[in-house]
Length: 141
Image 1: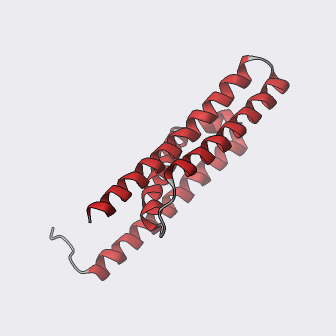
Image 2: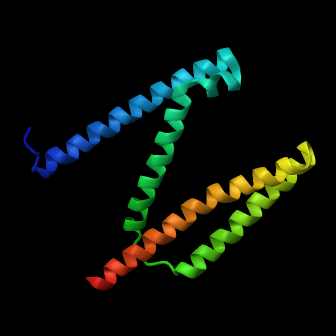
Image 3: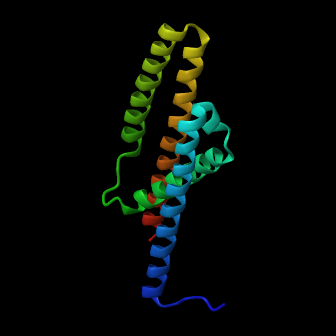
């Protein structure tokens, strides 16, 4: 196969891939929704499509982050941005941890708060890395 060089065809091909991805995601959500109704939450989570859906969603979000950083017009102050993000993440994870501890008791709240903190920290650090990388590339140019 020859590589497509016409920009209009490349753009149309990307649109086609996006539509196919959307239809595939809707199909997976439909199957998971059916499992949710018939088998409950545990039955839905046992379906291998749940894992495929979660992995696809996370990868899509990380790919979108790099596009979002490239699309930013002004360069954000890195230290200020990451400090604000860390404060917000800490407040949210601590609040959830305390609420879970109150309702469920003990260590589960600390574990839940810690997991939320880590799962939120990774994207924040990744975006900071992308911004620093972009800033370094801009300085080189």
